[in-house]
Length: 195
Image 1 (cartoon, rainbow, N blue to C red):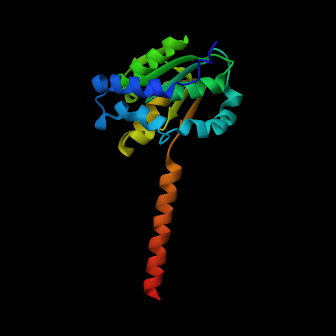
Image 2: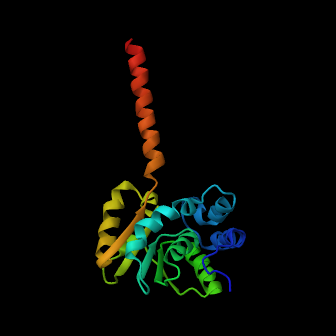
Image 3: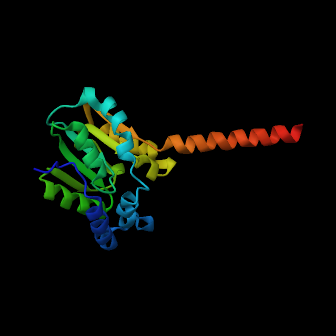
């Protein structure tokens, strides 16, 4: 039996292009080309982060956990979290405001026998009426303007079950390094001109 968490990047790129062409209404038709970027090796961050996420999440994993993945471009985050949980099996829900990745994840999950509920909605509309034991936001906040991030985290907090965990990965490292580097360069430049 095939490992259900092994991705087929070629199929995902092709099918993502097909589904995205008809379903993606995001700026730049983001989900149409995401799979192509992944198969080209341009975006594949989950694999590099897996050891850190595994270590961080390990104390909180158990069979039957209700896990919500908030925002997903393709099956990558679902598979990454599935591999971390394995051999345990959580109860997955994936939420996205775009229909394209939900359709791709739905087809992938069905082909692998993975139970995964898909909700087409904006994470900002979460109101706590449903709660999860773990909520995973993998770069999700990076795709939102700074002005709505506090609303995102209030919505997520309301939807986190008592004692639940929030796993939030962001792209702050590279941008923060660039900001600091540029600040240092400006300082060096001003120091040179002062001499």
